[in-house]
Image (cartoon, rainbow, N blue to C red; front, top):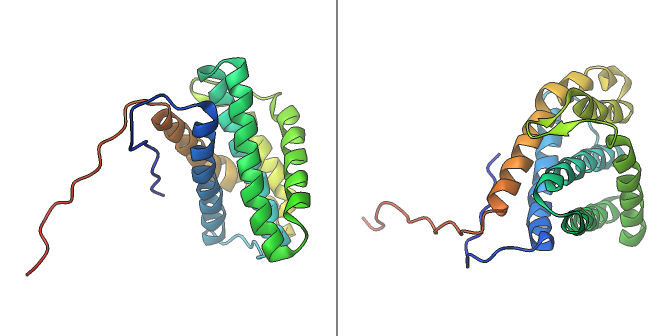
Length: 198
């Protein structure tokens, strides 16, 4: 999956909120990509509640990953602002999509999402995350949370899919995106090669 994660305008330093806003867009794509990859790997994920449960759980994981990276890069106050903004932006996107397809109000859906973030934050806090990334138990917990979402025939096999493939790839993408977004120097616009005409 290709992601755009550089600023293309002035080289000013971005606020934690601006970085979180940009990351939220990418994180949604990462979660959606993980869902598509899992379905391509022959796991049944029905469009409907199961589909949104998978997305929700994967987004929770991405928020926790981003928060741990922020811990190393921001002050305590900046980290709180960053993670709060990220959770709220993802909650809004999630709620908008879920309510449109499954009914209910966006406000109620977002409230459930944020409650889930608060629950998962306490649970993921027990797992290690250092400069090399999450430890095995951090990714194993995502797999554990995914297992009951899946149909019975897939609930055991999803653990390996998550730990071996989806979680490590997602962590790499979040880490790269945040590194790029934290660079103050904008990347120059690409020039097109070739000519048009004949």
